[in-house]
Image (cartoon, rainbow, N blue to C red):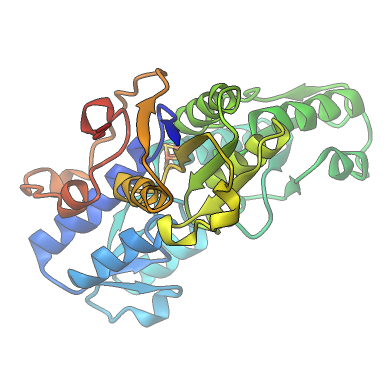
Length: 331
Ligand code: SF4
C-alpha cells in the first residue's frame, strides 16, 4: 500500500502558540493552570496538558479567585473577559491573533454603521466568541439559504466577516449570495479564512487527485478537520475523519492501493504517525510526501511569558507537524 501525506498538514501557528502559552504558564506559575474550554480541539493535546497540571473548565466560576486562567485559541466573548476581570483572575489570552483580527474587523464595520453578518457555524466556540466581541447585533449565516432568508431591506449597508476555519468554496458561495441580495456590501472576501485552513484545503485538493481513500486526522469537534473531510468527499474520494490509527476500519482499506493522509490544524504529527503504523498492520506500507506549500508563520506568546524557557513537551512528543518534511520517516 502506498501512503501519501499532504503538505502542509497538522499544527498551525495559532495552535502552537496556544499550547506554548499553557506550557510556559505551567513552567512559570506551576500547576494548576486553568484553561477555559479545550485549548485546541484535540484530545491528545488536552490529555497531555492535563497530565502536566492544566485543568480544563467550561465556565470561569470553576476557577478559584487566584487562578491563572488561559483563554483557548478560539477566543471568547467580551462578557467572559469582563467576568474574568471582575473576579480578578490572572488571564493569559491564547486567542489566535487571526481570530482577534476578525473581532477587530467586525467592530470596525459596526462603528461605520453597517449591519454585520458573520458567516460561520452556530455553536462553535470561535463563532460564540466573535458574536460576543462585536457590541451590537450580528447576524449569523451558515448557508446561502440563510442569506436568502434575511429580512433586511436590499439597500441596507452590509459588512460581513467570517469564521477562520470555513471551506473556501462554500464561503465564496455565501458571499456571492450576499452581493446578489444587497446593493451595498463590504467585506474581506475569503481572507478571514486563515492561511492554515486555506493551505490545508488546497493541499487536500491536490492529494485527492492521487489517492483511493483519504484519512483526515483530527477531532470530531474540530471545524477545519471537518471541512477537510467534506472537501475530500466533494472530490469523490471516500474520506474518513479519524482521531488516531485505532479508528481505521479494515474495510476502508480493503483493496486500496493508495491512501492519502492529512491532519487538521489542531492534530499533532504523532497521530499521523499512529495512523501510518495502523496501516502497516494490513501489509507493507510505502510513505511519500506530496510537495506543497511551506509554512513559516509564527505568533509570539504574551510578553509576561517571553522570558520563560519553553521546553515544549507537546512539541517534542507530538512532533509539531507543520511543514515537517524533515520529520517524516518515509522508511
Ligand atoms: Fe489561528 Fe487558523 Fe490555527 Fe485557527 S486554524 S488557530 S485561526 S492559524
